[in-house]
Length: 502
Image 1: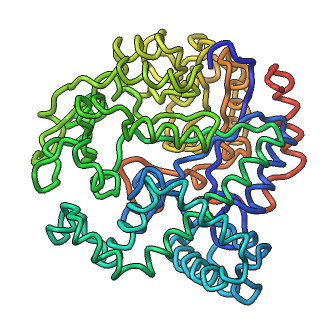
Image 2: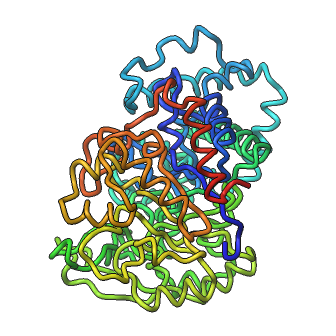
């Protein structure tokens, strides 16, 4: 993204959009937000990962059974109705919880039922049946394993794949053939769900292109151990003969955590991966960059070096640094994509080897204004005077409080004084969101991304995620009356004034 024109965009996950069906979706909810982006003079829309979520992982988009599949909770009931796959009567019983929160259990049951209804009516629509068949053929390299894995998870009532009968755990051909016959109905259900998701996503992406909006997707570097990716490619990970990890991912102890963080994801066997001509990782990037115009890679530093911890340890203290794939991976990636449409999530402790890797491939990093006003050194990269052109500046991320919530709940007198010294005037919980948005827009950074909560000046109740907690995350939603023409025009004017309007 080096030497790109100055531009800006908004961060808002699809689940957070207003809709009458309990969760944002790929239909009218997304179309209305695209129009808001266009009216507000924005050029980018950043969203969180789109892979399947589940109630057992608190519906986190960063915890999934597949790195390739789509989240069927985002399927638009209205588009299914337009296609004749469901009727008005079928839409009765939509979740009726608070309009500003997602009730994931209710939404999951509702969308699963709609997919079943759509499948019953598929025979009446030969054009859709034909498109469905083409989709299944084009995606079979990941789709078939995913649908089987999802059906097996249901069959074994959520048990991890390492606890399945050994022939299925080890993917023995006879056992797989037999279980495919037994679970054929649910496998087909999951196939159709994926077709509906990706066909609707493609339509939404076309609407973005028509409006001149580029999509930024989010790609977690690691995958869950209990995922189809590890089950179907165990040789790509450091596992024992029963499929369990020998070492797991995390980060070492630091100022914020004396025991580090033990994430528990399996780590990659990069030597084995890089010996393959067409690796799972390259296919994953191909897939992501088909969906999105730009991909933000979470925990980018793991490509330079990563912290691996013995799997039987309870903390991250006794881990060790292991070499990531570095240039060996990115040389291959740039042969397919040049320039490389990637943003590095480089937050936390970043070492020279990570900086060198980003510099070599001109990959922009992230700057977060909520990190800019502490008592750290003057060379803090998040401070506005240290921003560079080839970076992306945020007021905050999905893991931060909102700007208003941060100011009211997390800052002390010294931090507020440093903020006001930077702004050149006093601020308040009511003003700080607008102040930080304008500060981000005025940054030297080529790209500025504003969380929609900060554009609206919302307090900490609108926070999306609290790291290291489970309850209450990923549920926040916009309400239909919040995205007003007045706010769009104000943001457009500020975007023009900062030289970011395209």
